[in-house]
Length: 275
View 1 (tube, rainbow, N blue to C red):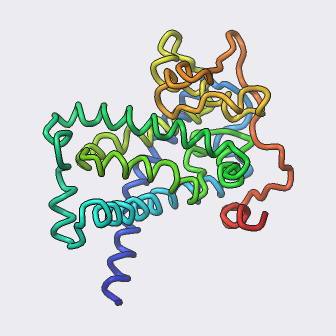
View 2 (cartoon, rainbow, N blue to C red; view 1 turned 135 degrees about the vertical axis):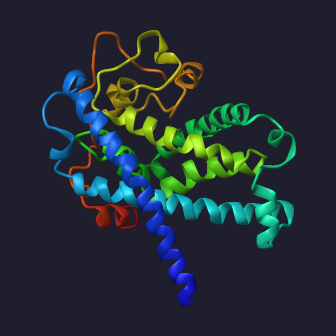
């Protein structure tokens, strides 16, 4: 038991340590970029009143994502394929399986990104419905939206969103090896779309999600908060009629209507269960 606990602690520590250099790099990059191209000039990101809350999510979410994903992959292999041994799980997932695993990793990454974004688009829309909104409200609660706000997700939202999407794509055969490249890219892009930047990328705004595109999603419902659900590819919003980027206008106010919504990390985790 002690060895298992020690292994868990070491694993958590490794996950956190891997996140530190990425975090420092993003902090430096967005500090410079927002100096020149801020969407909403004013405070610097490190002056956010709820910065500690964002930092807790930033370092906690990668840990919980890792273990939720592992648990779901183990359960999925057991239920769908009858694989329950450690050696069997390693052999099954190590390099993917089936026809998809025979494709070049670059092709697998493209399929993964498209498939995952399609799943996330629809789960995201579900989280804006009344039953699930109390969990997703955590992500929208930041009134000063910054790159560090990207990880502010309630574990239930995380589990029913990104984790499920990842697991579906891996179970159908995509190799986990794609995460070596996609992992850092996903983190960087998520920080990018939440960054305080006025970038639209011009004609490429339909190709890849940008800060202005996603910041409209964090505004009030009547201003754009019920639009722009895609995490990566805005073309999904174009197809399903939820694309919103008014020309010559920038979003400026964020957050949710609930003025009594808690601002601390622990209180936000408990809040959906106290409603």
